[in-house]
Image 1: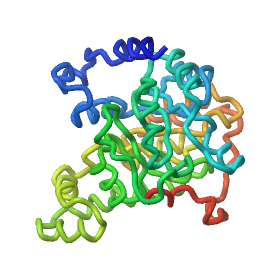
Image 2 (image 1 turned 180 degrees about the vertical axis):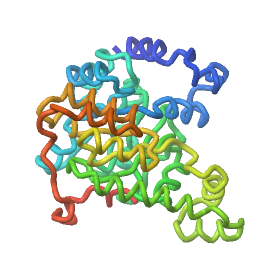
Image 3 (image 1 turned 135 degrees about the horizontal axis):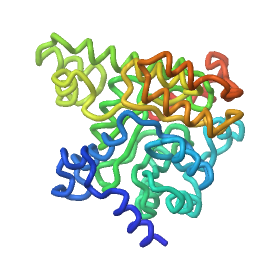
Image 4 (image 1 turned 90 degrees about the vertical axis):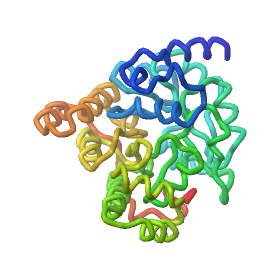
Length: 320
């Protein structure tokens, strides 16, 4: 089974796309930082959808998702169930890999090295070290540099983002507040990261070094952000995106793409909602298109007021 996944993965990752040619992926060693970041950058401008089975994965692919995220339950169901949320059953992950031709990602608990090792040998294309699952280690994250598969991690601010990149993350996503259907925290986190990067403009090296100490981030990464005017890796938005307008809003705020968790398969018409969100991301600066694709979608997922969540119910504080 694993051999078949590897063969399928090789087909999926043929370096024939424009992005691949530009990055000379065929000349790079598998697992290098440049290759990991190159793969992550190929998802730019797209929608990554949470799925719990092969049927949902096929709906996501048909709708135009650039990748799917395999997990046992979507975040809203994780909230309802409580208890300990873990990596999805490997058999389910393999079923999803078999069902679609787009990249398949998988979530692991923060700090759970073995869950990540398992997903890597299963043949997933990227691993999300996610605060949505119950943390396995409350002190340390996974050293992502030890893996050949790229990682994505959540962040609420520039310091968190750069710490995760220093650990080897090839993609960052705003944490938002997953499973709420409320985009307010995703907006807060995107504004925090983008605003901090804009604030680096005009600082000299000593000031950048001081700021790096203040936010507990490596100075060389702060300097790189100042020079680039953005994070060194792609920055997606996640956590609370429930409508096409939500997705377009995050793109207008500077996201390179979006993750949608419960917002699709907890809506009343998942196939239509999925297609509408993809169209909204592709046309995020055209309100006429967004208005058109938003018509007749049915009910969006039920939402939660994040200000009424108890401290134990807030997921974004995990893994700082």
